[in-house]
Image (cartoon, rainbow, N blue to C red):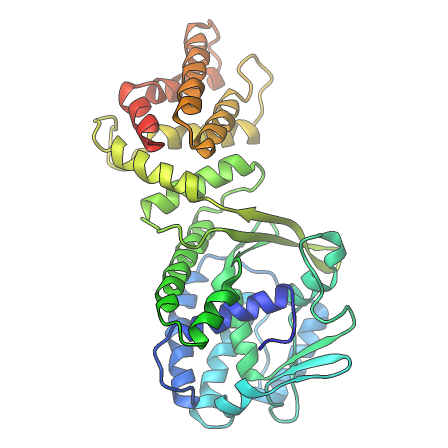
Length: 395
């Protein structure tokens, strides 16, 4: 099996899992090329508006040599483009029988200071990209991460294993915005991989559902670019969008890595365990119930809870020093706790207090823009149909 631990292994396992869910009798060049092709189109669509950073200086120099040796060309300038390109070029090598899929996948060599995956192509390996390697090697900044085989050890990849790493990375990639990479990894995905490998075919269907959910989740994060500044709002907005897409929730729990360049080094500045099953189930019921009430001016209008979430975001981005400062955010925090408690009585009590707060806003004499926005949102939120839908969401 994979003789390393940590972040790099998790990325590789996501790549291997994408291969494992495909139907094949045995892996050969033709089969692996077809599997890689199946994912290339989807990744191209995913990356259209996803963003990326440019290769670090060291990676640029290293991959120039690798690309010249392997493909007689130069590498792309950005990390996501590099990942996609390496898969496409490896497909060409497989179809031309210039490499051997069977031999490569079986060839893992653990040395004193390195781990070699696959067989050197044209006498050389590729190194790990900094966006993966540095996150792990500088793990002391995050207690969640551990080094692969030691801080000084090298991981070397042939074209096939580099492609597997790239598939894993692009599977978990949830966008690059605000100077930060968002990567979403399914916890313990290796368990499903090993179960399928040793004949438990029923696990394949569960893994397929997990990977489909992960695709929906990462696509939402790429398109919506939700800020992680406030975790409660982030989780509820993600849950609402997942509910609209009818995601199963099988992907949870996941680990979210927020990675950014600090000086010349990529670091995981934020590592969060996310389990949105409670809030997703709530949002599914809430959205289903709210459809029964004529509350919208148009078909694309935001539903009341959605309006409240976006107003809370707006409050935090543009704080105003007045009596009603951040009141929408306070309401969201209270709702978040109530929803995740799973208890009707807590939600009922929370709604009662929120409605009292809201009525005090309506009766205040302020005519500021923030008060008017809050008043408009609250009027929609306080409608009987919305309150009933929220309460039924937790039943």
